Amino acid sequence: QSALTQPPSASGSPGQSVTISCTGTSSDVGGYNYVSWYQQHPGKAPKLMIYEVTKRPSGVPDRFSGSRSGNTASLTVSGLQAEDEADYYCSSYAGSNTFVFGTGTKVTVL
Amino acid sequence: EVQLVESGGGLVQPGGSLRLSCAASGFTLSTYWMHWVRQGPGKGLVWVSRIKTDGSATGYADSVRGRFTISRDNAKNTLYLQMNSLRTEDTAVYYCATEVVAAGLFYWGQGTLATVSS
Image 1: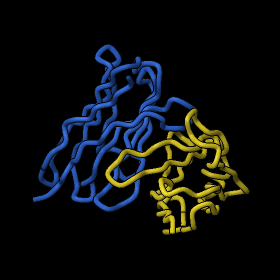
Image 2: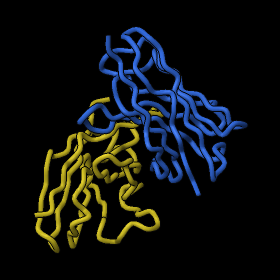
Image 3: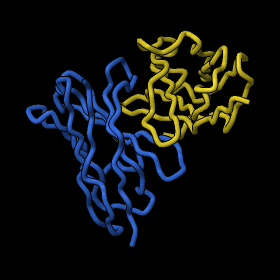
Image 4: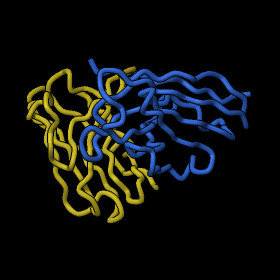
């Protein structure tokens, strides 16, 4: 159960796009269609932004999108807004009723 | 309104025990798989445990397996985490969360802080 690998930081100017990667293995990210992404603002509980690799819960703007290629999943935030500045975590089902989170990425809006 | 409220955190010495509770309101707990997730001070999210709707199946992170036990009382709409043989590295805010969509944690509590220190 090693943590999924994410870049520590990412940034972009308002209106630009930023993409965050999440690298795992064939036993987690690449093996199941159960990759989720969470946004967390300081001092707050996480918020689900993407589930089942590409699906958005009701209420999440379509500026947020998910994808996957092999053992690497990605979250893209288009049209960056100030309120998108937060920490982002990926998560994947890892078999045998277990899950694993990513190391987290701090997104800064310049 | 859907609400999850954790309680039971506090200061405990290494080797000690704590029992966390997560009281659900605004929905029927028995409908969903439930999780515990923790976050150490200034650190990232770490998945801890998961339990099936009726409690018949559970899963644990390697770091807590054999020391922590997840359970639920659907009649009381409450989730539990019994934490034994606590270590300093177990110090964290512990969140309960609801798996509303497949493998996606939609509802979260505000967290309860467990501090393991001598």
